Image (cartoon, rainbow, N blue to C red; front, side, top):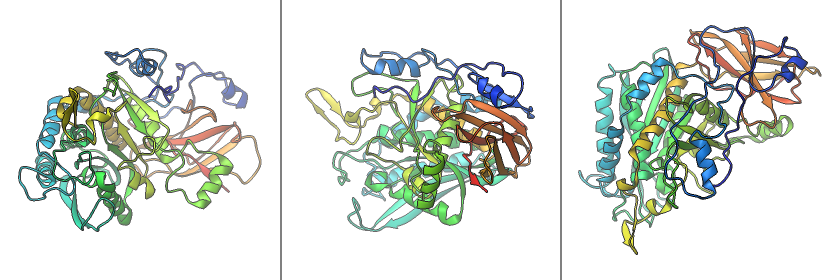
Length: 505
């Protein structure tokens, strides 16, 4: 919690020197944008200011909190994208009061333990399931049939924390894309909860922060997008069985893998309900985004290539996280996105992991510092201290801002081109220049491509080379010395996530 933020400072843009040769490119300091112009808005970063954090304690966390709240020399990366008017209008519809109502309603079911009652209309996981289903059906009613809602049920056989075969149900809403429906992005929260004993299905387990807060984010995004027409397909899921072993998410990920879904990004929002840490310090304008480096699903052959060419910091999930920072760390959300270079918290895990295991890019949103007295705890008072995951310990304004971060990422992903495919660096001959090749996307509004690069010691992309609507380009820089990537651009000026190239003969 007292670590230096992973977000690195990137200086403001400076004009590039004359020419695009190796010496000219290397001489450019800070952010450089080179090459031919593409149709649409420029991707020049805009320095955004967020409200300052309040009630920051005099601890080692102070420096981190101050910087993430917009003080200090924070600068957006070279690849940052300005929020569009369409996106700002969508974000303005996110309703803090609806978020609060969702959290309080889910907490009111007493317990949502996976092993609790499935047919009691007022208490237990079944009551929560039916309420979530009803809310999503109500949102879908304004979509003109483009949003569908389903109860995805399966029988989980006995196993760790599942003593007998148990029916587990995910509630899933799908908003079909208007022009690229086969490309899919998914956001989820888990609606099950637990008390101190993970097998206690009877005691109160209100689960307000863990994870009614994440479900509230997914439901609010479903509500504000239901009447809109994203280019790609969006999926909003409330999954169960997380506390017992990620069972609901595993089933959902398996279903997408077996269906051959082109799932290009998955986010889980888990414990996003409060910016207050266990020592009382607050960081209300930042959210952590956990993103793995070496892919969980990496094969032995892929590992051998990685060891030879690098890329430990360039997995699809890490590129997805950079994209989130590009589009959601700005004044439109009022938030800073702190990318954490780790799959999840130390020795812990969440619902994005089953998706990572199946090769999908995925990442986890979590509040900046947890208060462990208010998660996985029996509701009780000890020496005047209240324990338990109760709604009174949530900050609903904060959850609404996290929802805006998710919405900015999800909507921009849906409207931008998909991540480029078959991106490679030609290795058939030894040269100090680098030739990249790729497969042209099928989007009807595709305008062209941008090559991005950075020093191997940098965490963010620092330079952009605009190459137009082509499928190959040579940069006068050695692949031995820097890392390259490629992103697509559409006619509206929206950029895709970056694809990291593989060696190609």
